[in-house]
Length: 160
Length: 297
Image (tube, rainbow over all chains, first blue to last red; front, side, top):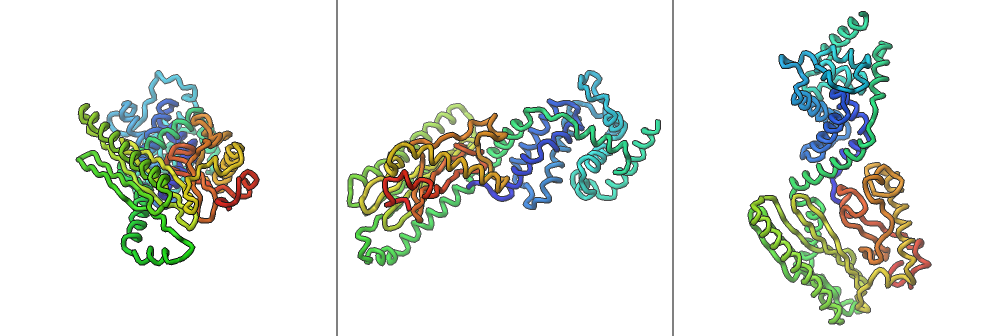
């Protein structure tokens, strides 16, 4: 057989978790076609990589990092991200997506994009601070600080 | 998560609709990514392993004539049927390389069988080489600089008193790589080539073996989620033709324990990462169909 063990692990992971990382991609794009593009590109990047992790527990954060970065790249390319930085995400007003009106998105949209990633990864994808730090290439303390200020902002908003 | 609002958000998040084309998108990307990775690897690991086996085998024969000599002193083995590399084709240019090894069967008294096998091997490798040379000329003419290569070699699967099974593999690299494997099994005592239909009373074996393989595929997938075969009733069915039946002359060999082994090329019944796959057919499954238990035990 042609495959190495780490390659097997990766394929297995990619097949078993496709819905989870699709949702993650969708939480950035709010659009099915773009989310599928991100999935396609992320899987391609991961599968063709020569540096896939050997340890099973490292696969998820490694793969999520690819998905998050691919999503951010796409957002930047589509100029959805505010030019002044990562301040706010502007949803295209032309988007016909019916889910746009969900509270979830309203709340997430009030957050800077890297705060948003933390909320999604921590509360919806149940990742640890260490894993999130790896994914976002930040240190653990930064992640924690950002999470708390993100939560604070969300609460303020919820009280409105 | 204590905040009820957050858990409501999570519910919304978990309810993000999953498009039905997601599995096919993922599958296609896996295969495409895998091909890119293989191109990076240039020579796939399996081919490397097979080449190593060939090396060991020829080295044993070449380095230890005493071992061969000792065998021929055993009275039961009247003639030593052996396999040696007789000819190699090599071509090495910047982006193009070919390395073809031609096995030769020696020691068969049945010259007709020996020469028909050897002629066949030689002819096939010659053809491979010619196709390859033609391909690279076309590529050069078109000015495309892709990587192309062809490697072939052989592996001796079984070599006991009665049976010799030789597998010859070809790895074609043209951007992506594909691997094919062809087996020949001969009865060294009777000096005949054994074909799959010749082992069985009638054509029923196709169905019986196919059913057994399908069963094995399902069991393997159940036991090990890393394994994937294209069988009916799975997610894969909508994207790939599921496995139904083996061919009448499906690739096979007989292993050292006298078991029938059915082999499939890369991509034949499973995604590329599974490589060349083999199934050992339990003898009791096919016992009633066999002409005799001479080869299959």
